[in-house]
Length: 188
Image 1 (cartoon, rainbow, N blue to C red):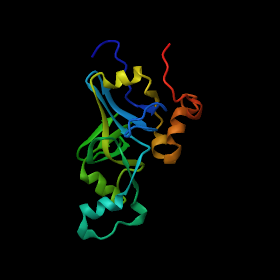
Image 2: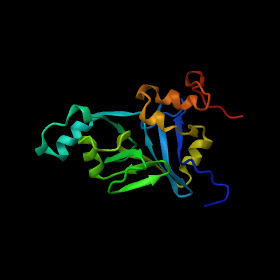
Image 3: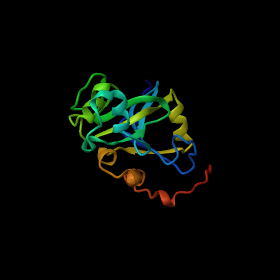
């Protein structure tokens, strides 16, 4: 790693109005890992339309329907591995395949998903299908092209803020009103 490398671990990436990629338009991405080799994150404000009960019925067809009290929305975490479920949660919880990233952890194993369905899983949590990934230098190039704003993340926005307010709440951490940003790119 070079001495001038600035890691964005624990930060939000907030899509600028000019970012039109369908996977990231109007998105907020929580960055879990970022080094000279690339970056890994989860989009935290894009519901998939699926619920945990939809997945539970496939994982445990003999168990019957999921208790509605344990159901939760599943988000599209990003375009990488879109058929893999990931659970973002506080690092104090540990399951098979859990990797801690500071105060939060990511689990990609079925035991965490089943624990959520049974009401014994990590709370709070965010369940996603897929994740976002950038190769070496890719995210830095996107930042230079003003595709993203970045700021230190607040887990309350991930876990407690209504999904439709997450992008504006993340931008507010920077004192930015997204409605006042230009949709045009310019260079000085």
